[in-house]
Length: 422
Ligand code: HEM
Image 1 (spheres, rainbow, N blue to C red):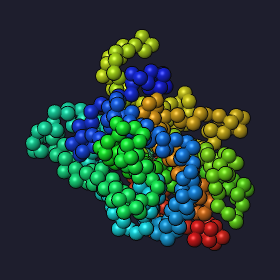
Image 2 (image 1 turned 30 degrees about the vertical axis):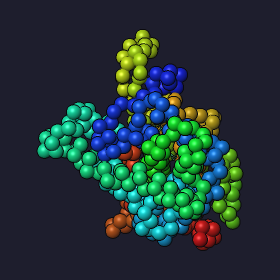
Image 3 (image 1 turned 120 degrees about the vertical axis):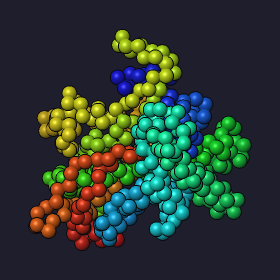
Image 4 (image 1 turned 90 degrees about the horizontal axis):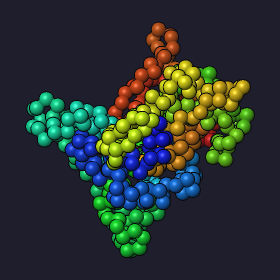
C-alpha cells in the first residue's frame, strides 16, 4: 500500500503536514519538513545532484578512514561509545557537505550539532510527537497554558537552530572570499548561485534550509542505527561470531574489509539489513499528506489526509517476517539455507520524499559495521555478582528511535587487527 500510494501516486502523496513544534523551533525552511512544491523541488535537485549513487561512492575512501577512526576511538574510550558514533556520522556529513575536517573536541561544527542533538531534538521530538502537533493553536498560547509549554520550550531552542542554518553558510562564504574553501556540497551551491549559472531560482535561504537538514537528517539517523547494531551484537554473540568467521575467511587477518569486499560478505550484509529492520531509526517515517481527494481499494482518502508509512509496523509484519521481534540476520539468506525474507523497503521512506542521503548512509553504515566486526570484540559487562549484564532491548523515540543507554565491553580482537586501525 505504501508503494501504491507514496510511489505510484507520488504526485498526490508527497506533501508534508505543518509541524508546529518544529516551526516554533525555526525549522520551517528545512527540506524534510517543507510542503511539496517549487521550493521543495529546488532542494531535491540540489541534493540529488550531489548525493546520487555515483557521487556517493566518491566519498568511500573518506568514509573508510572515518570508520577506522571510530574503531580507534572505541578502543581508547569505550565508555564514550555514543559520542564516538555521533562524531563518526557528523564528521562524514560535515566533510562532504562543508569540506570541513573535525580535528578537535571543541570544533565549532561539532558543537553546533551536539547542541541540536542535546538541546533541540529532545524538545521537539519526531514530527507529530507532541500535543502541539495535534492542537497547533496551542503554540500561540502563553507558556503557562497546559500544552503550550512544549511550544514555549521549542521557541527557546531557536538560537541553536539559527546557528545550524547560518554558521556553515557564513563560514564557507567567508572561506570562498579568501579563496580557502575546499570542495563541498555547500561551496558548490554557493558558487553556482553567485556565478549566476545553473538554476537561477536558488536563493541563500534555499541553501541554508538544505544545509541545516544535512546536519540533522544525516547524523542522528546514522548514529542511532549504529547504536542499534552494537546493542544487537551484545545481545547476540552468536551473530557476531558468525560475522567474524566470514570476515576472517574472506578478508583474512592482515587487512581491513573495504567496499570491494561487500559482495563477498553476505552475512555482514544481512547484519546491516537486520539492524535496519529490527529497529528502524525512523520508525514512523516522516508523514506525507495528499493534495487531492483519492480512492484506494474502495477507500475514500480526502485531500489533506496525513499518510504515515509505518516502517516499524512493516518490519514487524508476521506475514513477512517470522519472529519479527528477534534479531536474526539469517532470515534474509536465500532458501533452503535461510528463509529468503525480503529486506525492509521502508527504512529510507518512499517516493518523491525518499531519503536523498540513502546511498551515503548505506555506505557509512556498512563500512562502520564491517570495520568494527573485523577489529573489535563487543561483549557483555560483568556485574559485581560475577554475572553477565544483559542489556534490555528497549528503545526511546526522540527525533529518531535509539536504544536506551546500555553498557557493554569493547576491546580489540587481537593486536594484529588493532594495529590496522592505529
Ligand atoms: C541511517 C541513516 C538514515 C535513515 C534511516 C534515513 C531515513 C529517512 C527517512 C525515513 C526519511 C523520510 C522519507 C519520506 O518522507 O518518505 C528521510 C528523509 C530525508 N533524509 Fe534521510 N535517513 C538517513 C540518513 C540520511 C543522510 C546521511 C542524509 C544526508 C546526506 C539524509 C537526508 C535526508 C533528507 C534531506 C530528507 C528529507 C527528504 C524530503 O523531505 O524530501 N538522510 N530519511
